[in-house]
Image (cartoon, rainbow, N blue to C red; front, side, top):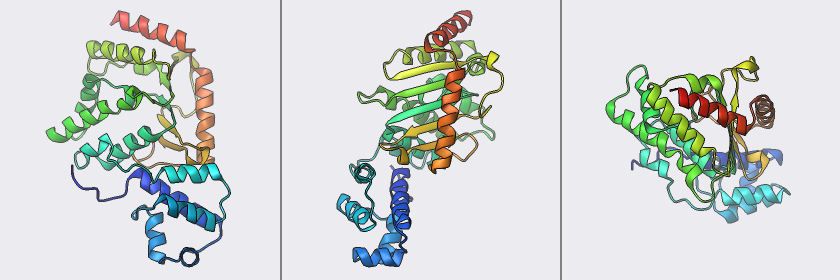
Length: 283
């Protein structure tokens, strides 16, 4: 496993939230350093995610910054916890860093809302489906990176296999179900995999039918990860670079509304499964 050269997405998010707490208190880095009896560079490094922060220091920072939101403080303290490398670290150096950040985000989420309008969701792609997708890359991927991307893509499904799997809400456009990535046999197996996942108690699957016409964010796939408190939610869309997460409240509010609307427009889960069964039977 190659050594990490940059802070993880989780470390960056913790640092970002510590910076927000300081700025909300109206403090400069110099003033914060004086309050905490430390160096300004330690404050800056902590906020950039480059400097490890202990739970005690997070609580001390929150107290000195006047943060009275105990649920937020507890959530930030939890982000300092277990630093055991996640499964995605096995792919460091073999796939783009943004891929690792997405897997890390999904793994720590308290809930996932996903909408996909062009391909099957990354968390539920079969190996053959993923191979067909990556084989279409331009320029062609080097063999080693191709295999690493396929393996990483398939392993993202582990987040839904574990005993404490988060609630997973998926809206998939009907056109995805008809797009024969890899050919009819691959698509049939992929549909079977998707329908089997929908049987899990934590999974809600809906199909957005052709008949809906225009819908919010047409053509845009979205991953919305719930944090332990709403302030720590994160959204990622197809229109930005993989791994570039957004978590400002106006952006989060926009995509909460986005999901609420597409879920209202989509077929109910039972009807969605019936449509998928009918399509798979014709392949």
